[in-house]
Length: 138
Image (cartoon, rainbow, N blue to C red; front, side):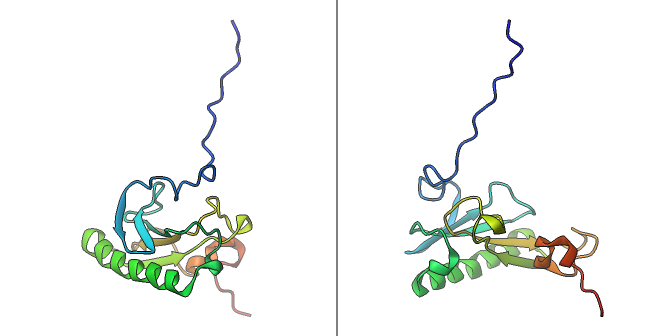
């Protein structure tokens, strides 16, 4: 009897692209983009907005796609406000593996924030570089 533990192979979200193949849980969509709740939410209501065209980098979106994504961000904010009543928001996109992008198809995170969800929220998105998160006076 072998003592080897069979490792489960993880699905590569880029082969095929997770956001191009039958996206589940779509909440809103327009001609150029769609949105849905994040599969691994960091807070209640965490949502992603995704252009329908497969494009890896945010900076490669057309102005029409950017507008379509912004329209959905604004519509999702209204829905999230109604359902979850957050106290604030972070909005962002990871662009490139060095920035933490793991699915190479643009997706913009809408992260609702709640009073007390972290001890000190000062610095917000600056926390991607923890040593730079809190402002230090010179």
